[in-house]
Amino acid sequence: MDTENRDELEWAKRELAALRESVRSCVLATASSSGQPLSSYAPVFIDEAGDFFVYVSAMAKHYAHLKKTGKASLSLIEDESVALELFARKRVTVDCEAELMKRDSAPWIAAMAGLEARHGATVGYLKGLLDFDLFRLRPSEGRLVLGFGKAYRVSGPGLAEVAFLGAGGHRSAK
Image (cartoon, rainbow, N blue to C red; front, side, top):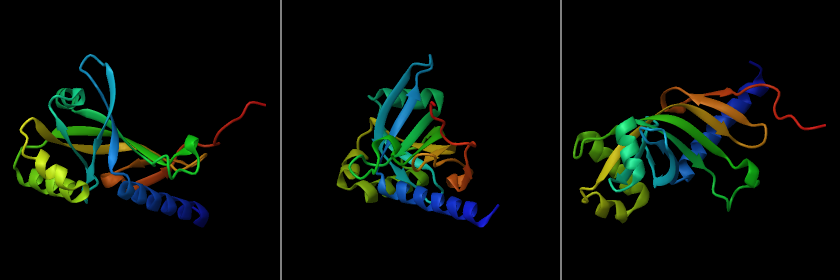
């Protein structure tokens, strides 16, 4: 791989890290056991391993979907107010395996501390509510979009592997 391509992939990794740091909530896509799709959102915490954690109410539809199917798609997307181009907002969308975390286990306590550090006192209140549960969303692979013609495949532990996606870029009608 030439230096220019290597530099671009390193830039994409830095942009992904910045996106993960700046975006505080995720778009969460789930499906019922019959395949009915649902889009929602949740505040998110990302641990050092790159796993995503959401603390959701059992009254939410996506809670049942996560619990029954163990699958989700998660997106982090640049805020509209800072995006240079609405049609090309920076974003990453990943396929995830969802795991219900055992309340008061060491991993639960660590992730809840991370959520509270990131999102403040509201988490301290919510963690005492027994109709809320913590899900770990472990990403497998996804797509990172950093602008027009700047799409990448992300994969591996913590989405540390970034590769070019496809070839030829966008086509236009003549």
